[in-house]
Length: 76
Picture 1 (tube, rainbow, N blue to C red):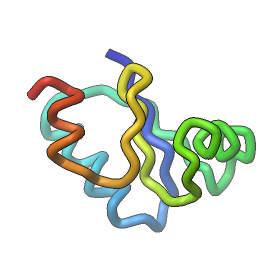
Picture 2: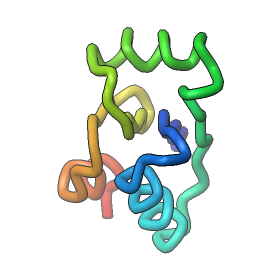
Picture 3: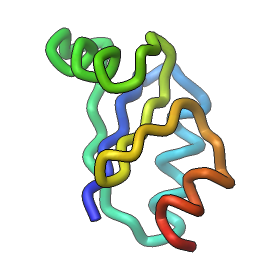
């Protein structure tokens, strides 16, 4: 399972999401869109959103820390 998180260092929901995934034992790629313009463009293209976090779980895009949708996508 491939998990990408598009985030910023100052986003509290991003921190909550990363903590949640770590506690559940999932590895993920954390992409700081405040420092990577190409990643920001990729995030907007995938989600049509400028807000973070955006999580990409095997191509399924979830905007924000929507715990129920994330758990369903992770099959937990």
